[in-house]
Length: 165
Image (cartoon, rainbow, N blue to C red; front, side):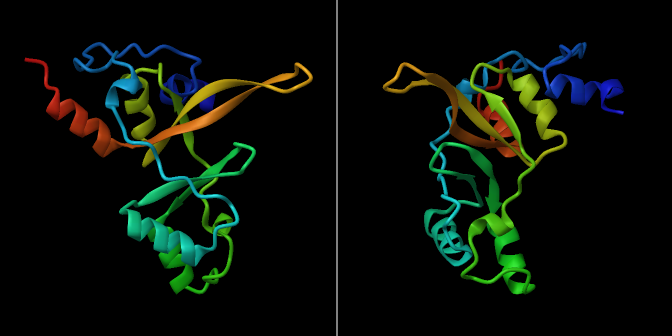
């Protein structure tokens, strides 16, 4: 059950991590990773176009985000290629047919320790930033904007390049 799983509780903000021997980077904020802006795909992009874009731009994965700003999931080059080759989808199908809809989100103000806990189970996390958006009639809503995609390799690179001396 999830409520007795400490990693799940930490990942979802219900419990603070009580790890005794934390690495030097544990409490540093995610924003210090200094990641480049992600490539975003709209849901109507075809699988073929997604493959072309990812290969051309040198990306392995990209978030799929509706024009409304709703984050629909992640698409990976390998999953898209294998799905097309296996005949599960057509080149002309929208990328949403190969989008992973289970993903973890993390904020810029969250710690690298929390990110580390997420990356123990997930291949990536989507970094989001919340923005207040106001309409002409004074109504407001909070939107999540994709700020980046982070992998275990990004965290490892940060830790090794910025070793505490």
